[in-house]
Length: 74
Image (tube, rainbow, N blue to C red; front, side, top):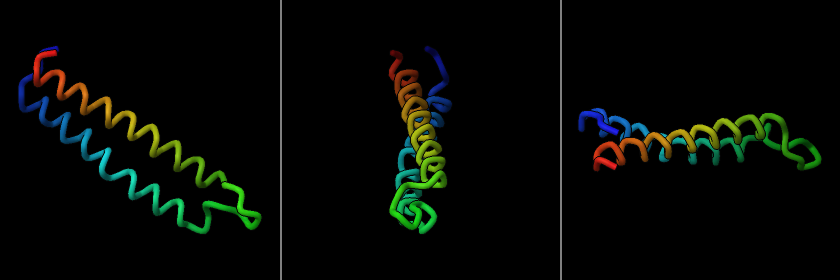
């Protein structure tokens, strides 16, 4: 894949940003009282946010990998 180096760096930075920003968000969601019901079971609130974070991190990793591969010419 051939991209200009600047665009490769944009992809790398965007990917790393996603990998850094989402885990603290998930930790806050896990501490939120809406994450579990009265009996301690996980709620839909938690599951929706867990899926949001998971998908965002997978896409962030893919974005960073594409940026690195395009930068090194792989």
